[in-house]
Length: 583
Image 1 (cartoon, rainbow, N blue to C red):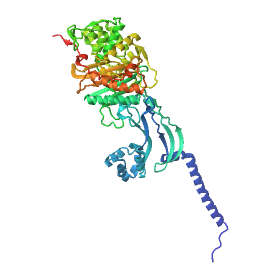
Image 2 (spheres, helix red, strand yellow; image 1 turned 45 degrees about the vertical axis):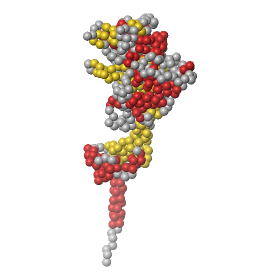
Image 3 (tube, helix red, strand yellow; image 1 turned 30 degrees about the vertical axis):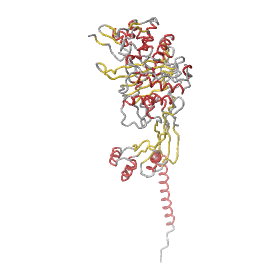
Image 4 (cartoon, rainbow, N blue to C red; image 1 turned 180 degrees about the vertical axis):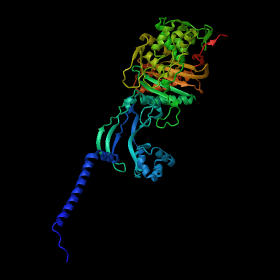
């Protein structure tokens, strides 16, 4: 027979159970309070570390266009793959699979991951085709992610290379206009909080911290059509005459805008591996040379400003002229020459005798006002100021040689600027690469002096002059040839630089152009033979492209084809670069 339960036992058990439940409830509440009030920040941070990310919103670099809106540099969207080494190394057996997918040697990727095992970011491959990046992401390898970036593309490749320059992988300008206007072209990246799943996919945009601001577009003064024409003609000439290199510059006379600037050889900025630094350099603004006879018009201008009679006749016979203990020579005895004939026949003696009528300071001052010896203020990175020594350092011989283009150095852009100054009524306009930019203007000489010299230079293009091959049917052209030897330490080599600088049309000048061809070795080396034809072809096309009306109507409507211009002869060029020493 079982004993009867005591009356107090059920109540005791109930109390025990209630006590246990109260204790458990208290523990749960306490834990919840701890989690919510005390450990909330730590847990939130842990959760955010796993799912919430603050990412950069890529921004587009500003587009560069020519003066007519033709794209010269654009940014295209690409994907860049990156990895979190901490996550990937948890499943290290998949590293070989990833290496094969991104085209890296397994040992190389393994080493990189080991070196960055404590990091949370490492690039795998940058600037990939989006489809190729997606194929890697689809492998679902832990710790592999992608981000949107932009890659710079240059549709005109080597034609624009030295002017436009290029950017690095982070889209910062390294050369050319890309470097000069990097701040303008570069946008401001944005910031955004997102949630990713374990595969790195964005599942939610949480918060926009800062919107992205794209870079500003840049409109250059370059005309793509004239640039192509100049590059094509220069390349053809360099190859035809087996020259080392060439440069050409075209300026708008009134505004100073650079319409074309080309160099050959060039390079493709879209694929520039193993390209020598010399090809990346824009020789038109960085490289200097002695200008030879292309300086003589400015000696004439300085003499006219100094008050010399415009109708003066200068004796140059018998073809040699002694200064101190040296002789200056012409290739032939030109006899008495006017200022016009001095330029047409390119007389060194006539130029030296003109220089002797002026003070060093006056001649230096005029040359400086035309822009020689100082930077053109074009704003191009690495521009050279070239060299024009101080007048107190000129002796009689140095002064004479400077008067016909030796003993000083210039850039091709400075030559083009000086001829544009003559064509602009004696007002020098600083060159610019930006369409519509305001530029500095300096009066170099009075308008009547500039106009007189310009009309004298027309004779250089006419039959009997040194640059008949620069003539353009229907237009009056003014210009000057130059043929100089390449300067080296201690003297000059028998390697030549062929130059031509000219202006067209004379009545209402629009274009000034300088052409320089270094060391031609086939078909001659005179500026009138090598460089003048480049001027002819480029300017003939530019005048029509820009709808410039002819200023020689009679020739324009002539039924008969013009006679083929005769090639210049040796007597019409001043090849000797330095005075001869008296025996």
